Image (cartoon, rainbow, N blue to C red; front, side, top):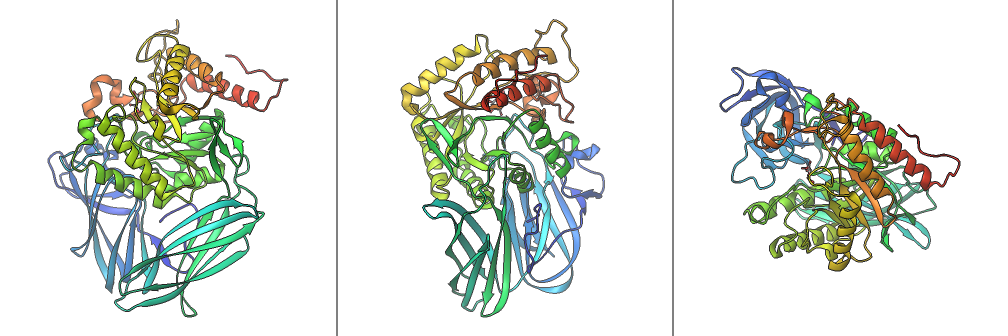
Length: 567
Ligand code: ADA
């Protein structure tokens, strides 16, 4: 998969050429096939800004042997063929998937991907929503040449023991032949190496566990995000068959005494909700845009980001690992009622998004918490049951991180006891009147009385809207930049003043396009609560947030000599 570092030295792996031919299949599409760039969304093409339908991406490639195509993200249904031979299908825009083509004659072949972004009765997670469901291949596509067996997945868990750090590795291998495979897996990290045997039946898959005693390594912290390369090599006898390179950070996350601790130090989270979207490139955010977003957040004093409401591009997570930006990552699901949660495909699509998120992203040290089911029906018996099941799946897949869910601010929540960290979305002053402090008091009491006593609390969303360039010199009108500043000031000040609340994620970093079905509540067909607009032009609130977040940073390091800058 394309990352910001080299992922193989042995396995032949390369990104496909960026130019593909695009042919649309439904009404409102292109008159004739056209060249487009991948990664990209078709909404970037002026004729397809509102196209909802099917389209074929096509490219001729020179290849042969045992091939593995890796699609980082296709929005939101994909069917892959090579010379009309079906290779696989995938649902869900926000996680990657592989398509294997074995024993392919060397030469020129036609790779086709049918992409479909129509909402229909088979789609439970991609529905008209408060963000846009784009169409296209929006993350890189890689082609790899495999030998007779390959490493399909690696999970690394750094654990702190009495003798220092230990790296627990779980390596999955797939045999691509009909004969049994007997091999050795070697894992190296921080100057240590260990091996284990692996035996697989014909076309079989197996996993081996290896533990490395790494001892005294430099831990990963937001201030000093030390990363170590891990190298995994698969041998058959003395011959190398495959390899896999990754990076790990040694850090431990624990929840204790109403706090989230990173290597024993309580976290004080100040951050943003960020949709994966950038101006007219939509979901296909260029890497330059990713790093700029992180730099802007940093500049405002943020130390964390929430990938609302779905898993993000691994290259964004790579940047967070390198920059020490803490990440709340969540599987795909936003705002579902009980009726929508009872959709026949809801559970399998949700489990797939969750499984792919954890298995593909668990090695990122920046991810400190897993989230799920943003604002779904946590107030009904059926809905609460789904929360409990999904939280169980997350814990079972990865016991090294706490789990949470951003809940709607309403009475009657039934899942506080199931969460490691209780997270609440609230919009006092924006959707309803009253002092922010009163909303916080009310909510804290309700959490305490309904199973959440003693758990860390995060305000996972809070914010107000402003249309870039819309001004009200008196500073009160909704949608004005001044009005947004006023509301954010009260919200942020109230939250940062409460030591029992360990984090705030502002809604939101940048304005995002919403589904046409949502247009009537959303001027410009955008969710305008960003502190920057969709092109990253700062609104006045950028300064307000910088002042308040940086002010709290100073309080935290207890520097009595400095007081927060005022506007
Ligand atoms: C919710 C939701 C967000 C967004 C926000 C808003 O809390 O989780 O996706 O819709 O409200 O802007 O109202």
